[in-house]
Image (spheres, rainbow, N blue to C red):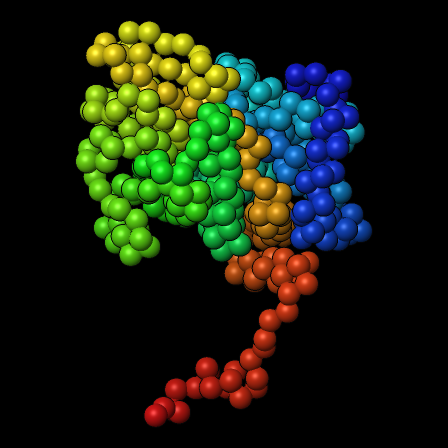
Length: 418
């Protein structure tokens, strides 16, 4: 079997990690039972470019139980859990192409290897697989029914492709699902990003000023967790509505130019590039920590920082010190890559349970309905979204009320008023 992982001897520890994560993924486990019985994905060739984590491994096992033929590559050079990659190869017999810390050349070679079986469906975290197909491997398009995309960043790229008229097959934006972005982005990114920063630095957040760039669902999650740890939180935004929400949620709202002189920790969560750049580095106080919670490593302009640095050194495993000519030192975490997966373990399995249930059901939806879909980006069908929420609550032993027939009738009519 074709694969490229760090070390197959790590497989047993990876198997245990996968098992542990699976205990917190009851919705996905229910789908796996259903898939194993019905084989709805039989012989469907899927190429996936996802973070290779213990949670992702449970998704891969679910898809394989449904009969899918899988190949998996990493969606970020620093997010791979090497023992999980080894376990997927050894125990699940899934070709995996992912090594933590791989260089760019290896990363893109791995994407090509993931596409080598001429997929009928693609799964993406960041849309690198889709763009690789469109730019380098267009001959694959004739076989592809559709694809899924799980990140805010990837959805932005794909919607741009659709607007430009170049998207060659339909994509389901898993990130748009309520049971994804309201929980994965907010609670998952919030907790795991703070976890990554603390693991990388061992700082105490209480009393520090944390500046968060972006107040989308990821930024909200990070802000709430930083506030809960005792930090003073400042939000920087370019959207008036989100800035107003942040203000009324109890945070300071400032321009980044204003906030940069007082921040102790900076976290980007925007999906855009060069958010923190030269003009900001020049005004930061010595000792400032700079981290990124967005998918790609473009939110911090490290090229500009490197140009003004007299010296660089790695002071901790995920902390690089930039010494400037005026004596200040700035600290970049995890090479500016997504901090939660580079320096920690990523989102907890409990929240990824819903995200990956969306992935699994979206794959099944595409197999059944691709011929009816246009070459554009679609949201997850509402009935699937609600079913996942129902299953999650059910797994937690929580029951909710139902509308009475009278209430249902009232909501459907317009005549009854004051």
